[in-house]
Image (cartoon, rainbow, N blue to C red; front, side):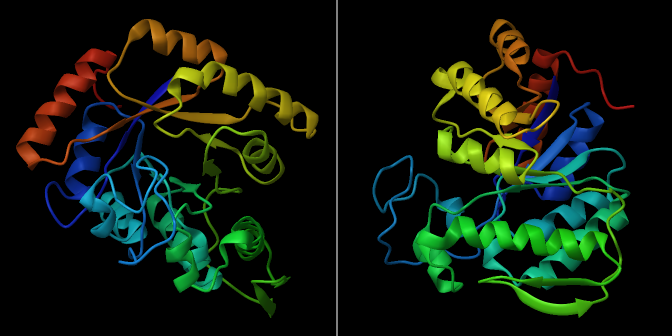
Length: 285
């Protein structure tokens, strides 16, 4: 099992570059950041944790752009995976987003993983022209179109939300296939979408008690959709517990992800030291 870090970025506290460099130095394998372009003040969408329009953390209003944040992290690291948990691709132009991601993968030496979400905040999506009821269709089209731009010499796409004629676009990503994971609740609908269109699942932080059952369902659907091998599963964890991690790994969890506190750089670095010790990490090589 690999261990990673997620930094809920904001315009306060430790910078993504400092956090990613420190995580790599301590032996963590991955570094994730989230995304919200903005938060509409008046919303009908309920947050999945609070159950209403209130937010559990003011950083939802203060998140840094994920791709800029990861580019600063790429510049000061050499090995750590650069990922999102989660990004919202449909809140961007797909052609320019494909260019941004390909450029980051090119400049980082092939270290990008896209953790994407459908978007719980349908009011936010609506401001970007994405109807809440069509968010899965839109995300599928965005991913298909970006993959075409990343892999074909002359790419084109025709869909409901994405349309462009034969086009050239370089750089291509270093990776033959940029990994895509979906952060969503562990439902049959979500798992079927994951198995049909992506490489794996990022869990939500409020369903760990049911994780083993959810993993069984994911494996069943993965096989039923004709996928070979096993999906990548990134589980959001709280405090490390060796027995639980061993159980998760045996059930198919490939990565455990730990959130950083919203504190000053010295406090975050001290937390990383304690976390790395608990996980038995000895520093990156």
